[in-house]
Image (tube, rainbow, N blue to C red; front, side, top):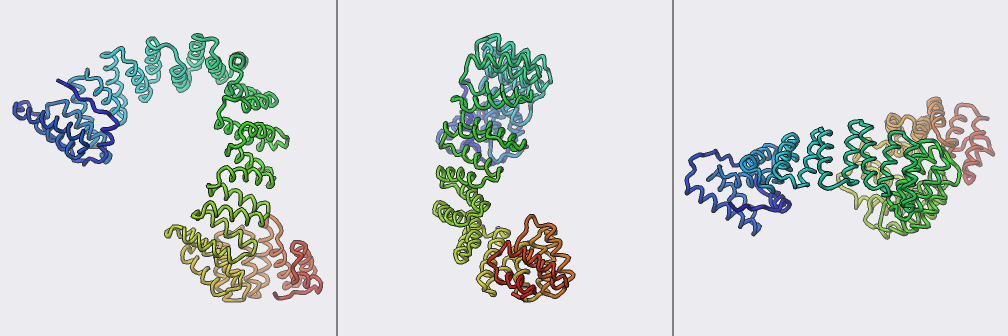
Length: 580
């Protein structure tokens, strides 16, 4: 009987849209000749419809043919394959398909293509033991089909039979010869089995087939290094370098060996050679440099070693974005914001369409407290990424910081326009930012409206609670509400100096000076650095608690931090509290 072998990929694409109803035709030993002929006709017509891409007709004709002649294993096979590969197939449907395919394999295992697909289906459905049996049968029927032996080895491995997998690869090598790929697979299986002798033996057998092959020398050296035979490992890695001095992997491997031995000088030398080698791809170089830099940072190394390597690498790949990104990160860890910015500017020049790159640059501008530059970079970022909501969330606070409140508000509005309408947390944050901007503009009504809307969107937004509480306290508006909001913010962030300062200031405004003192002292305790605002508040609260000299001392400290404050100057000169 003529066989029809379908292309597996094309059938799987066709099956993705078929219905999932399963035909359950019963075996019928007395199928009439007429039904067999009808089934055969329907089967061939199904093939014709498939060629025309009439998916539904193809599937229905196959089901009809199977109902007429359930004993025809070819029809059963292809109907079963349809069930297995349908995109919306349930596990039960797939298993029924697998059973139908098995009928044909049991009847005619010599149908090579169909049997091979059936073995793949068994593996796909997790029938690893059955897959092994199918492939073992095919190896016996088709001993010259090397791909079946390779599949059998893989099936053994999936089934946890690693010794059998290795033996199958050994047999395969009698036909195809030794190869790096097969040896690597066997070494991996030996490692899984913790078989050190097997690992070394396989490495040596591959080496012996071509002792002047640099890759084989390197593999054997790597294997020996893994089992801590370092002297022997060095011999083969050295040989690999002599045979192929441009192979960056030999230097990386030797670097690892020196690292294991604690030899930092030779480790650096090998890393350098790896990075300057021409045949080590950029991705590997970046990975090596990343590990190297992390090690330098962990060791708090202040030498020029890392920078020298970056400079070497950039001389080779001056336009490689990933290297500039990593160099920027390195300078950031060194608190060298100027040079971190310089490297990040290269990145934005190379890829100005990436909003993430601009956000990193803006972050560095802010860390360097260069807000004038941040504004310029923000404008460029928006030009290249006018529809990036994330970018606007960076840009708006920058305009706020330089007191360009109108542009800050415009950026917040644009971000709200672009933001997902269901992202209530983000929208709450944006509305809170608008509240801050209106607050700075002394637009009380709009500020309160924005803060209130932000809290409706996200009632747990502690930043908005804090800012609204402070807004109310500064203006002596609804201090009871300010206290409730501030208390909730403190509950959410009990170690935030800013939040504790607000709580203290609310109590100050309510003339509860003892409570104010308790919380301002907590705020100072949790402050990472002195701020003029908190220190001034501390002085005010000390004054109202009768500790006048301490109050003046803190006003003086605050004035040093904010020498432009006329109010602070008056407090210091007159040694008394002035209500702003």
